[in-house]
Length: 269
Ligand SMILES: NC(=O)c1ccc[n+]([C@@H]2O[C@H](COP(=O)([O-])OP(=O)(O)OC[C@H]3O[C@@H](n4cnc5c(N)ncnc54)[C@H](O)[C@@H]3O)[C@@H](O)[C@H]2O)c1
Ligand SMILES: O=C(O)[C@H]1O[C@@H](O)[C@H](O)[C@@H](O)[C@@H]1O
Image (cartoon, rainbow, N blue to C red):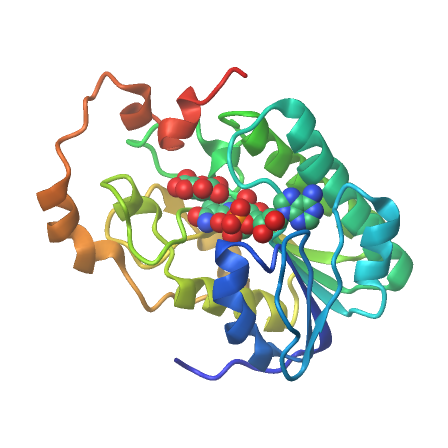
């Protein structure tokens, strides 16, 4: 693993108890002097150079206290799958609004926002899209991420807060199925991408697809070259094993037609 650049004094990681938060907890320590961890779920004891500030994203007061004193944020917190609108509204829509309002009040300069490929889940798996294709959310979850991307643009245009909206594909230890051969992002590449977003001299408001160097891909990151992200992993090494344990896709199944996979069929609730 290459060593990250320490770019920030106090970096806030929300959603720190989740799958990606847990993967990032150790990895992000080299990117800052103090790593502040936040979630509603238990985070255990604070380690060296760590702080823990529990906060519910739906509470403006708790989010304000969580953000105070931080100079950059990696925002992973929120509901990470399709869910009823009321729940998404609280955690993801109000949550991201509270986060940017607190960032504005406390002078936070840069945010990495965990957006999702479900912002564009209704493009076909036979299409290649880039960041300027219009959103085609595949559910309330994807819609909440599209809202977050637009909110981030507003706070850049009005208040100069820079954001990388990282449309994460599928970030797990390994790709779980054939779709994830296209969408997979290794934990190390996720960390490389976040590190690049935190350290590039000029970020602006940028949308980037979070993927490893997979041979099969639906996404073109050429509009985000200024981030300087160079993936080093690839789903290709898992291809044979994934093919061996999965059957060929049913080409009439919306989950095989659209990029969002099974998310395009989740709900209504
Ligand atoms: N893992 C992926 O492949 C993937 C892909 C695309 C986008 N993302 C996004 O990346 C982020 C992290 O994903 P993950 O896989 O670690 O998800 P996760 O569900 O494992 O973690 C999300 C964390 O957010 C916390 N959270 C939920 N509601 C909250 C609230 N109201 N207040 C405070 N904390 C709250 C949860 O307790 C949890 O620990 C999410 O925003 C997700 O939408 C993940
Ligand atoms: O599309 C995907 O594979 C992933 O999309 C993300 O947004 C979700 O958080 C994750 O649970 C999915 O597995």
